[in-house]
Image (cartoon, rainbow over all chains, first blue to last red; front, side, top):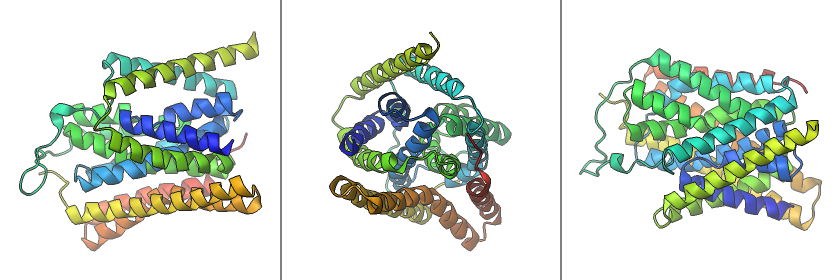
Length: 266
Length: 99
């Protein structure tokens, strides 16, 4: 089983890095459906993989100097608080309710990727900064609407603690549209925040015994290598095919989860 | 004015993430290999050590950023970082819950 988990992590890490989604979204349902892990433990365990992906990818963004550490740290006050709170509440939530929530979110995520025409978050070709003599030319900006940003971060963090996902689809548009942050900075900063957000909830899951070490370790080993490979391959593989593959997997897993839940009541 | 463009600061924070995740990877890999070969209690403990290093890496990143802000006498962001650190520590101390 250990080797199977490494391979699954490798695959999830690679797809995650190629599509810019993190990969945690497919790890949780796979653990729940095919490895007999209770949903709350599947979420807690996949959070370790989420932290791994975030650490690897945000160190790349940092070295490109596209991350706004001050903005990220400020919004992390809200994401960490939201994540720790909902992670705590998961201990009291009915297991079936959590499964339904997860399957619904999985379906929603797949539809969102489809609606963007197979484009995932990290793909903003038109916003790739130009290299000048001194570095990247990012337009000057001043974060606006901080209360709204903090509110959205609280919700994104809450979702992260509840379902073990990153919350990028909420943070990136709020930073870009309402706070006046350039898209490339918003994406990098959202990515930067995921590690701390996931750690805030993972600590709670861990204390409750919901991080299965024997699964988390081989999975994270695979994810680490997979995301490095994926980052290398990203130049050569057409990301549209990866997005189609990801949507297919997400739809299948969501459907399977719904069938699984229904099966218990019919 | 934008708030970014402090290359040294970015590099230091990136370094924490790189060292932390790579160390966690190496320790977890050792544990996983041990689990495949001997499948015992020791293997699980090595795996646990790796998982905990991974879990602590983002916390270390906040701590290092806080120290860097304080050294720059940027009290506002030093305090914000301390707040994030406090939430992380409180969460791991009290966030137990039950099933």
